[in-house]
Length: 323
Image (cartoon, rainbow, N blue to C red; front, top):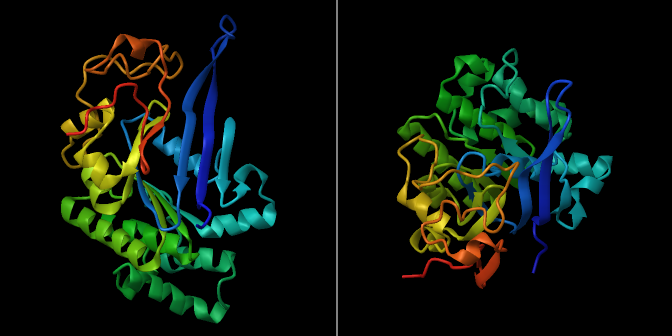
């Protein structure tokens, strides 16, 4: 069996919050991620879902090496991201691409599309200079855009077009892994469907490993074969997409499914109670204050992510009974 592409071993990410003013110099710790364990195999398509503040974007940033873990290890293959040398880091930057949520804002408004797409090709020395123009044209064709757009600027493109250019730029370095943060948010339904079809076809044809943040469980179902559900910095349930959507075993996952959002509406579980502060987490299960099936043990014991089946894990003392 091949080594995993990514392995996250009890990963934590904390931020120090300092009081403001001369009279308040105390500091507190905000835990954005707390003991995350995750394994990503080559060719996997994984959706990270959860309410705002659950830690999805922080997790992506750690996997991209943009921030260090406060504790635990993030492995790419068998190498710790924190220990990569300059040559390994450059190879990692080519093999792992990122598609920003704000695609237009991630592009230099003064650069033409041809130059934006050529930049990663030149950076990684993927072909001779005289071959770059043809390669750029092929990238644009691959994402379903006409060559006439190459001399335009990002501000002259529609929302759907600029998202496709962002995908083309991610593909330019011939990556093995693509990570995307809400890459279809803000698009109308028809354009969203076109971009999702493009991403799904690219993953199937090229065997690209995909990690996709989304607030839309419909998007997760269509695009990804695995789901990891995050709540307050922890994965509370993970497994095959069909199994999780058809038979959720964590009460939080079930609540998310019952509150399935309309298009482009932030994911929010319809539960009573308040989300605890990540600065002052409660004792026991951090979901206990909102859980409709809470028991006394839940307020005393913090559940760990436990295997229910070979490919299914849940962090709950009393999992929802499978129908």
